[in-house]
Image (tube, rainbow, N blue to C red; front, side, top):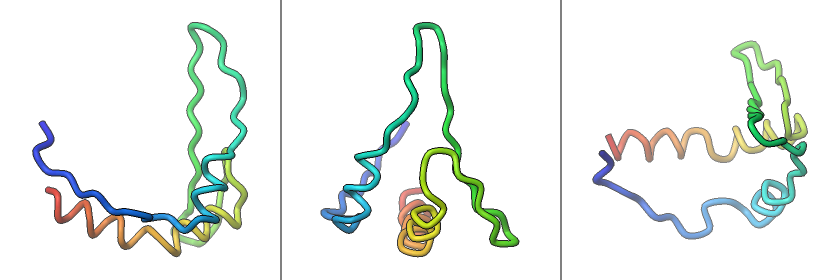
Length: 75
């Protein structure tokens, strides 16, 4: 299905990597599912699910355009 990959060393800054890897998520019991969904709306409003609003905005500012460019290269 996927025949292309792109490896990017240190894509995230150390701060962003540490913050993402230290997220504390709620416990999910057997036969349950939990979906976390952080949103940024076109009007700039942010709806957090598991990240702080400041983190969501920073991740968007730093990585959104680069991530979409990588996706375009891979399709």
